[in-house]
Length: 361
Image: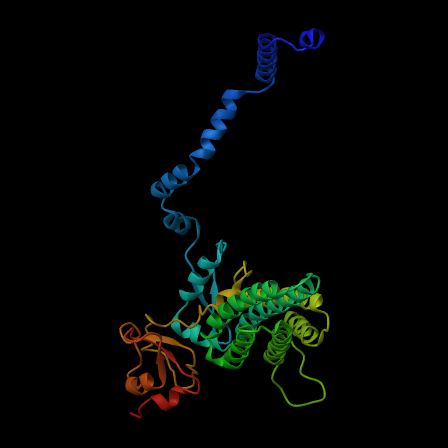
């Protein structure tokens, strides 16, 4: 017992040894690390939110952007039918791009609403979202097949994600009465994901809708002309986008669909940019899909000739929209749907021709 006890170090000696090692470690770290600089960096990050808040109160971001971006100018086109928009400033965000478009004269926006390139571009961004939804459903199906045991929980989670995306699509589509067929398809797809979800059915429906929208784009980009075996030639960029839409409509590979849809949307954005003479066109299709050309709730249309204009999907208000004297407001109201009860904001329903809403004077 005596020999064993002698082999055990004294507790005080152990404590002294640990203290010496600790001091040596701290000394070595102090020689190699700038502790004060580290503390200063930590304090900066700790005060990040305070600093950002102080900057937000001190700086007027909107005024700053207005100062560095030149004001937009309106340039009449050589055809006289569509007024082009030009800005030499950079569109630094989609919000600013939308503001540019909404600042166009009302008559110009009315003309652009039914321009084939603008209609194709908004559909192009819609196709990207539908194709992504189909691809994600397909990926979820493949993952669920690998799950051991009951995949019920995974199935419900995948269905919930897809249903959320479908509802977001439906909200955007509801702004476009001309896309009522696509809205009906998305709502049906969302219903198929409720209860006992059928992911495969929803995926197939999404891919079918993407093909249908791609064929819509093909039609919009096909130049009008006499019926012949071969369609009239389209301009180079337009023909390229039309070819992409055809490839997208008939591809059988979901991975190719993703790539084709992205390239198609990009090409169509730039065609809209060319039309509006904007240097920075990325995301224009998304801005159009969000209804940038449709809001006339505070627009003066009193001097605009509406006799041949399709107003379907136009948002107008009782308190802000000024119509020509020839427009029958009561009838227009009856042909529109109020966005919310009592709001005084309406959306013109499909099939409303302005020639029927004017009184013969």
